[in-house]
Length: 312
View 1 (tube, one colour):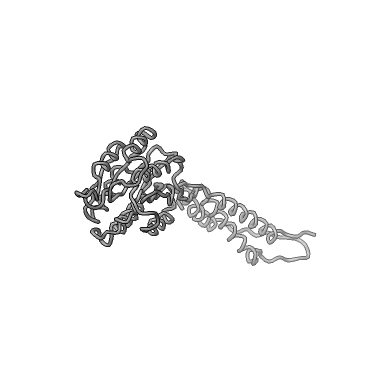
View 2: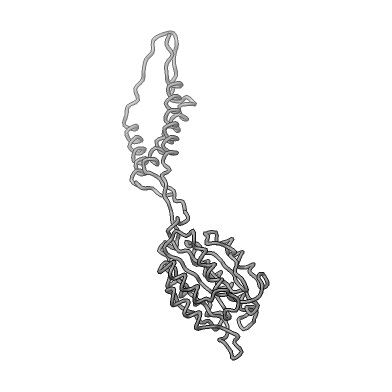
């Protein structure tokens, strides 16, 4: 809780001190009553002390209300704020190779989870692909759910194969309902396209035509380049996809470099939102104001009840 007008909090101790000093100087006057009844001083009445206590408590609450207390509530970014990011993960059979400990897929998933933890203000989604693509999670702020989808992404979920073009197309389609002007696809692959009905270059050109500069594609190459038998990474295609859509290719040769990839993307696609989150501050003085007024009213009623003199 914060206060917008802190000097108001000093009003209570100042007022209390002045009242105490003035009461010591004030002479106590007695009143004489005629009639058959004699009255003792009412200052010792058991209710009078309570009334005074309620009165001062009420004054204290009113001083707090005057200081305008506020509470901060963290909110999620609204549509149009932050980035929309879709991680497009290769889950073909070759991702089971252990040249990246404990496997290519495990290393890619670990790096992706670290990346997600560092971007709390961005909507992030997940697309997996092998012979065909599948959207597991659209861009969301619920990173806990997203992380569970990533942890559960395993080989064999889809028919084996590598369909880079189809995976890229489904990822781009995942931004259909995006309202932000900044969108990013992180495409991870360890092989050449073998299954797409439309080749990846054609898909990349279509994405550039539809989205323009609002969508960037970063490609991450895991594994070894193409060998004589045609197996391995198609670096040329992955590089062209990235360059055509305002991104860049990351040729990763170790699990440690995977973390560096996401760190580089973090610097290239820095969020415009504060890392500590977004906060809305709301006034909460009404509780203190109403409580103070009620206590003041009760104290006045109690004083009237205990201090009044009953006549004939």
